[in-house]
Image (cartoon, rainbow, N blue to C red):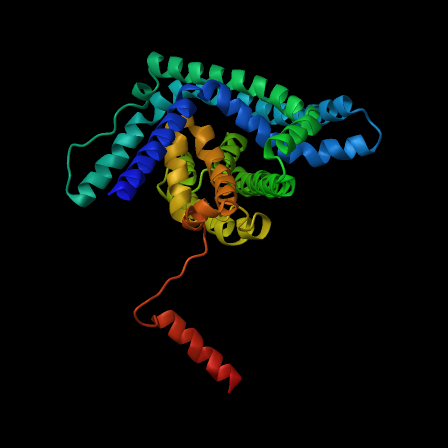
Length: 363
């Protein structure tokens, strides 16, 4: 009885701690989110700043030069996107006025095909009310504020690397080697994921941009970057971004062929990215299963918005590494992992076919 009561008490304490942690993550998101971005980017940019430092540049100058180079690239992309966004906003009244009748006709034709008459599409202008625009501008302002704080955190994290390492050694006591291995493994997970996904984002953006350019889409750079960046959010991001692009193509073309063809090509790009590009460049560095990824997206999105949907995936990888190194928490690390048995009652037809083909080759 006492053992059972102690187990229940321990479970209650654990649940209470989890609730408190989630509450802190939610309430302190304005501080924690840029801090986590700063830590992640510090891990990713450390090889670059370290290379400059090895060339006998002072650490502060090496870090500053690294941040300036990355910021210059980011500002160039941001400037290009802002021009395209402003152009798209200016085109909204024209698009709304010119194509409301067309959209209504499309839906009327589809309604006739499936037996639903009299249904029309709401006006596009109703989606862009002053309240919606104000909320969008407010969120954009908050994002810009966070973006301005992140470089400061990156600089401080890189500059005080030795200081933080010494702190971790002191707090870990005699287990210095284990804490250093944990830091090294966690850094590799974060670095490989962020750098790899940046490369994947660039490749997907270029592939989409080339297609949009030859399709004659006016804001092809904006939509290409949208497809690439939203691809960072597994499963959900590509659906949202593809829908927006297809909807724009539907509004600005005279035939249903173009939106359907755009949807087909984006699907091909997504298949290529999922089955060829990402496995080749990123691999399975995060080492968490699909269910955990989906839960990370949902929990991260509810706590930190889009940033959480991106950051919580490598954070799950770091959490798995932490669990694996603590014997009492190792089963939870296994639960997060992507290595699990699948015991089927009978050999499925695919495995049976592969075995027969293999036997024929050996014969």
